[in-house]
Image (cartoon, rainbow, N blue to C red; front, top):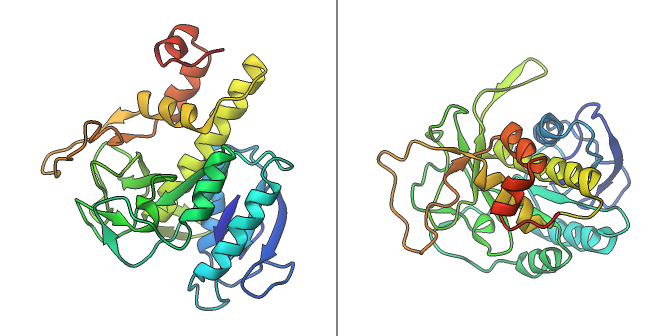
Amino acid sequence: MILDTGVSSAIDNLIYQYDFYAHDSSAATTETHGSIVASQVLAADSEANIVMLKVAADGSGTISLAAADAALDWVAKYAQQLNIAAVNLSFGASSVVSRETVTSLSDEFETLSNLDVAVVVAAGNSGARSGVSALASDSNVICVSASDGEGTFASFSNRDADLTDLVADGMDIAYMGSVVSGTSFSAPLVAGAIAEVKSEFYASYGHELSSNEALHLLQATGDALNRTGEVAGTSASAGSGYVELDLTGALGAVYDLAALAALGIVV
């Protein structure tokens, strides 16, 4: 499930699209952002079904929070029917905050959390070392910062030892002849990874892995980041999110009963 600028090119496994900005059934756009985000979800889980909900003005790429609010209400309405594992928001409010913040989307985030839908939000690209986008700071979302894919934070990435939940490669992402970077492209890797580990867990054991358990698994199997020069956190769990996504390691743990037991995950 993706809230973004819409669809600019063919997307594998696209099962539904809707434009919550213009209120019609086509999410088509000239903006490439949403399609790149979708490609990153599929890079983590090639079998994921993609739903694209357009929440931006065509031609400008400017996100409408009112459209996002309506789209999230739609996600909550159909969460169980569509068996939605995760929803990705690769956009944020302009402000950078260093504490949990309530925004206009907080009610929807809480509703989705109660429905066990993982809400994954990009941390933002202001280069802050002690703050993230206000949307990403919400207590009911998974905040994703960007790395270079080799254990070091991307210089542009917002991060916060108390707020970042996971880090994923967001550097030099190739798409249809162009190369892009940003936390926008780290977040969907995590959304896809959550869908993938939940799917594999269900296939192996016949019952659902919760979103919180999936995140815990991804954190526990992630790779340590270089924290030289990083700002220390203030909470007891500060820095727990400063690990880089290792999906191969996470999938290995799904099949390892001892590893699951050590994480308190019941099979």
